[in-house]
Length: 587
Image (cartoon, rainbow, N blue to C red; front, side):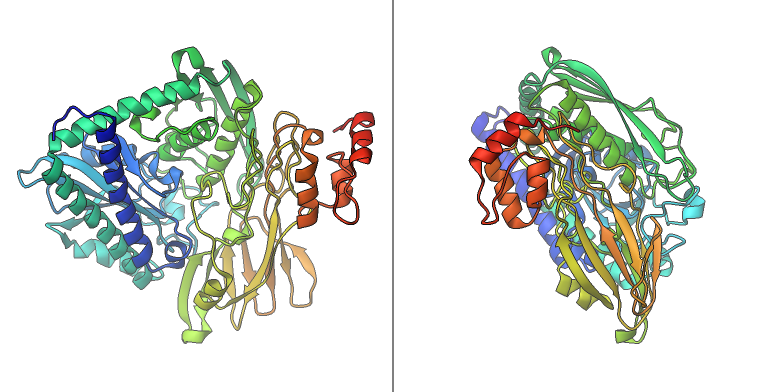
């Protein structure tokens, strides 16, 4: 095939690359073993060019893949001579990874003549990563040594398509659920090798120069699309402040600042995260992949038209970072175990800053939801003779979608870093996998961020152990600072967590961990999303629907939205007109 590609050629090869990534995703999802992968699908796959540019991903978590070029670049710096049959394990926060619980497998795609053409990579949030405590979120660890996680900076784990058994033994010896980890590792390797095989077939079919020409043309096309989309945004420079809640070890929380400079005439957005403090003695330091991904996610979420996410469109988003910054490039031995929590805050602040530039752009803030509903459970299962277990729950009782310029917050958003890309656990599957009972899951009435387009309401879940003790580890945020609304929209409800004792009494739970004995439960309340625009501008029919669904009360409909809903579930048009006309909404 000629290297001169028209629009049809671009579309055909683009779909072929996406089919490669979908095959990888399906393999990884269907063959993984731990619940956080096999049930919740906290995994991603992508293809990177030989020049370390992000090319393709399908059905992946954006925070996993939007910094994939950083990992590929670090791989080539550490291993300048790549060979066919190699595979590398990377979970290093200092070498292009997100956080250490995200194990990445990178495989160079090399032809029979030894020429490197692409790199495929898979990323999976493992059930356990060998940390000193039974969690994949070591929020209170002062540094990477205190965290204790096994760190693999692009360590060769296969040579000539055969495992390096020393590395496998290290992981099996240190990780609490070695069989689960090894099953997930085999799934990741299998997915990467399928991607490698399919790309080698494409190289034979199209010719490698055609595929490289396609990548250049696809990037140029995507850049043009991004320029067109950015020209629809208002021009301006805005600084937005936010903060992670106080936490054990960080009594003052983590203040964060973002400056967003939108230049429509230049087709450019600049996001500056340099005006933040140095890395802190805790697990909340953002990696470079998190910081870059946060900026990209927030800008893409703020566009009014779809743009292909790849290195071409990324050219128009400039992310300014500095070394040794809590929101930037960590310096060893800073701990980055829970870096996704401040990343949520940064994504929210960037989208909110864009919303401040003008009507119809940006987003409100989404709920920050690493509550016990997303907790990491561990213990010994009495149903199997005391076998150890550890796994992260991702329960439906985490909502938090942000109000948008043209729509309500997505109920299944989960958290800004997730962006709705993970699946929710089945109650039945969680109870089969773990010795627990989920007592209650429901939407919380009147917890949405009110607005012309409201945020998603918060939700609650209550669960506890059966016949044993369990530990629940989490990194709850949003208990002090809720998701903010924009352009007159109101904040969503805050998160809380309580422990119900065997006596039935409720006590406040730590924002980090809970030990549950038989008869005790944890109650997790997740954040609601912020609203977009004044609530009194909301379509009365939408308000009526929310009342009928039980998401808001009739009293809130009247007092906040200025809409009178009758006992029979109908809008009283005359009363609503009088209320909205004579009683303007006040804060």
